[in-house]
Image (cartoon, rainbow, N blue to C red; front, side, top):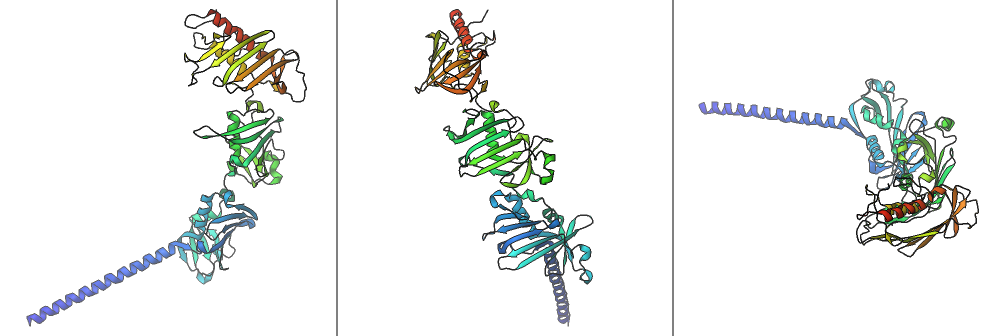
Length: 494
């Protein structure tokens, strides 16, 4: 009897355990079902990317943006109201983010409206429509209506469904994004090998320049950009111009600013001040027109882009500078390490400079020779300035005052001749012919160069300052220093 009673107790306990186990299993199932329902309600994926041929966003005022895809599901072009932009003109990060948001947007709620009335959610006359055109010819459409009163989300509905979705605010942000944000801020970004010439004009001042793009210069460590200025004179550009040319080659705008043509005058675009022309190796030309600086920006447009833009002056360094300030405006070139001899004749006096630097091009080394008429010209003042270098600089830092290609001066009455022989045996001969009482015409290798220099390039004594001397006065000062130097090769003018 006791055994039966014990058995009954065991059966009862087992039954209780079974019930508890069933309750736990049912609870876990219900919990899982709720989680699955919650996850299902948290996002909407109304089309698969790999199925798409295009994705269109229709917005207010008839605006339409179309993302087009290739077979690999990459965006190959973007259209805005009929204007097409290839993939290389797009900001791929912004485009990819938009496509992801449009196809897979998050939800905070979903519900079936009473009586199927969607009007009060703005869905009967949707503000936006997202249209997925698929490769099989079918379509999926999402209609997007009103924002929630607290702007935490926006109502939406997928075609073929009776549910109203409460999409996160991120969907509205994506739909209302400025189209210009999808475009690459570089309106062009040419490799130097693609460019033939770049020219510029400032219509307000009449200043202009033109450069020829040359193959990059290989320094042995890296490639340097190389350009030749061919107008207003055939010279090398200085570093400021090279920086400007590189900024033009990789023209990056600060922001796209849609400006209606009837409003051009307010932005200085009815008569642009700055004009840039690029001629490509292909023969194609690209023109950029920009206003004067207005409110800290240049406003402009380009022939290869339908959108007006603004750009900060810092993006185009040197744009407002005169051409003479952007090019190497010295009459002749010469550096200590490539010049062998310089023979100078001023009126009836001739002197010769000999320059033979050591293998490391160290001018100050004892085994580097620098002589004036066979005498050591490495003579210094107490501040360490070299008289011989002052003379060298007066010859090779001779600035052009102006250019005049129209005049046809005769090579007669030469007042000074400077003959430069380089280590390569290359010879350049400069002859200065009087132009009125205060200037000289410059003949290079017996041809008029178009350059005109001030008379001070020959005759200027800057007193005790070791700079700004003309060639003749620098020669007199260097001779004076050689004649009166101390044993330590130091001389100070009394």
